[in-house]
Amino acid sequence: MMPYHTPRINREMIYRVGTMGVGIAVLVALSRIHYLWFHTSVEFMSAVIGVSLYIIAASSYRFHGNSFLLFVSCAFFWSACLDIVHAMVFPGMGLSGGNFNLAPQLWVGARGIEAVTLLLSPLFLTRRPWDNWAFPVMGVVAIGWGGLVFADALPTFFIEGVGLTPVKKLLEYVIIAILLTAAGLIYRQRRQLPEGIGHLIFGVIAITIAAELCFTAFISMYDFSNLLRHVLKIVSYWLMLRIVLLTMIDKPFQVMSRDAYSFDSIPLPVLVLDSRGVIRSCNESARSAHPGGGVGQPLHDVWHQKITRPRPVRSVPPWRRGGNSPATSWAITGRAGSAWFCIRSGTAASGPVASCAS
Image (cartoon, rainbow, N blue to C red):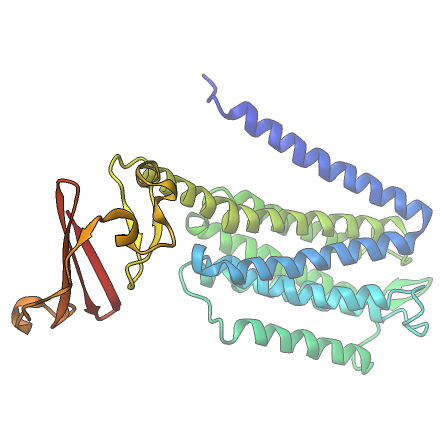
């Protein structure tokens, strides 16, 4: 018997694939009208995705703690930076000065950064990334490669009317070999991958390999193999964006939503206070008892009718209170209807704390 949610998942998948198919058809049609428009659109869209991957991964890392994807996203950021320059110096843009080598050399640098990062990424499936070096080191590599390109310090990669040189083809096959090795290493540790993204990661690698194979066969900057590799590239970036959104946004919000539901399902009023006794959050029972639960207001102004003055609490010897208990504290007692309450506050090792009991 099929699970109840299967039709919904199938519809979502059909919608995503259909949307991607329509987008690809529009890009291919654009290439027939003006190839430079197509090329610039693909490169800038993939660059926006690459930069967004790192921004999302870095800003949400404290919520998901996914070292693997944060490390990979660093590579996509710097690859996107090289791709932007690649698009600007593509033949016909008027910025290359007639040099047909700049665009393929920058392409190789971007794909090389991605391939080597994927090769090293299994190290971060079980290890926290070294945030203090991963991002800047990749930046130094990307900027250094760009410097070599514009200093004309690299061998010739492309000859107009002839095609790729042996050096360029060799580098493409090296990148493909690195990607295949990366896929094997990731497969060996596939159980460490977040649930539901393993097939997408292998899809990204497979499509990138296919794009590099296309790059070994083209003769002109405007032929079909060059068009196909750019289409494959935007698909691989789209898959990577899907991986990041699924792992770093969708699932954390699902967990938060589940926790919020559990919080609201408690039948008694529950309040969350800061160190000053101001209500910062509450559950549904508290909101039912008082409008808004008193969020943003002092606890006693909303929930307690009569309050006595604070009275000191006898100090507890260190050997009885433990290392994190305060040596001195204060307490407030009062009465709300027929129930008496007591609030105690002090300073623990982690900062000011308060507790409330009725």
